[in-house]
Image 1 (cartoon, rainbow, N blue to C red):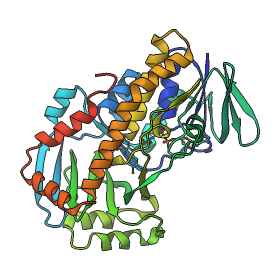
Image 2 (cartoon, rainbow, N blue to C red):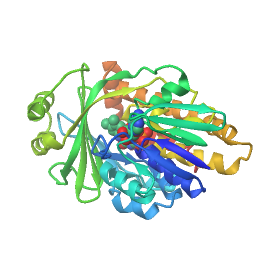
Image 3 (cartoon, helix red, strand yellow):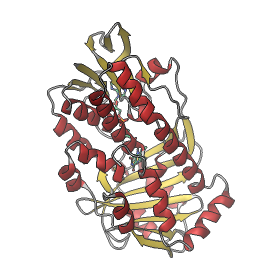
Image 4 (cartoon, protein in one colour):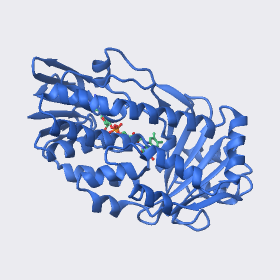
Length: 385
Ligand SMILES: Cc1cc2nc3c(=O)[nH]c(=O)nc-3n(C[C@H](O)[C@H](O)[C@H](O)COP(=O)(O)OP(=O)(O)OC[C@H]3O[C@@H](n4cnc5c(N)ncnc54)[C@H](O)[C@@H]3O)c2cc1C
């Protein structure tokens, strides 16, 4: 049996690895000639790590994972710790550490494991269709490939999604911009074994340790969409946005490399429950585009890949039937997490300033129990629980 996968991101590659493990002949196509992930790093929470473990990548992901033993929320202006706690109870409960990882390293690891033979870059898919039991992908240059099944792992602007839904799905601007990159670890910024988050004014500055003595940093700045800011103005813009903030935040802005800093306007898509049309199915951001506020978009793509392979491996009534079972097991969980992220996003970014102030006040009374309960509830319900 042959599958065409459109997209060689986290979703497409993990699905490719998962399907090949169960005997499928897999061809992955991506429009870019060099896959460069948008964003510097990503937190792979325990549910995502379990999926990578399941795909046989336990040692590989551990090798690129940062050591994140606990977390602290810090008042961004005063510089005072609001709450600080160990992640040990969380790890104990869910059975796996989370790993913040460099996106480039995760991408390279998945590409290496999938291998270059049937990974075709520079091949943009413009249309997909099913005729009888055969699916066809048509490329920009007019060429085609055919298979028994096609997976659209082509991200937030998916063309496969338009085919499956029969309409375009509108993306919704979430009201803030995320600036992210990497800097060397330094105790003047934050402890190197902790996720540190500075909060204030509906803004957020985060430092997460990844392997190689580096911090993955991001700044969230609420505001209008559609602004263009030249890279040479990145630092001045951040300095203005974070004027009066504590010394570590100023030091972080001083250290960023604007040429290697990503500025992303954050969007999501209202959840939808049709992921499958015949032998064509969606996976990853094409199926559930979320704001990154609970760090679960990529983890969901990994879960999709595992569930898809299990559905195809364990059911024998045909591809369409197995894909419907995949859809049945995935859409509610993904929708729940997209909506949780949206809710978290609104509180973090002061959509209702009173609710945000209430959250800040609550953090000062927090010993970590409630925060970890929230994270554990995102992890729970994963297919490998
Ligand atoms: C700022 C930010 C921070 C995030 N942080 C986290 C986090 O901490 N934890 C987490 O789990 N998730 C996080 N996410 C979400 C995560 O990045 C995504 O969910 C994940 O990358 C989706 O992977 P994907 O493979 O589905 O899509 P993508 O990575 O978008 O890959 C899609 C691929 O399809 C290709 N493609 C598109 N159209 C075509 C076409 N027509 N023909 C051929 N190829 C095509 C593209 O070139 C691309 O390579 C974050 C997202 C953002 C924006």
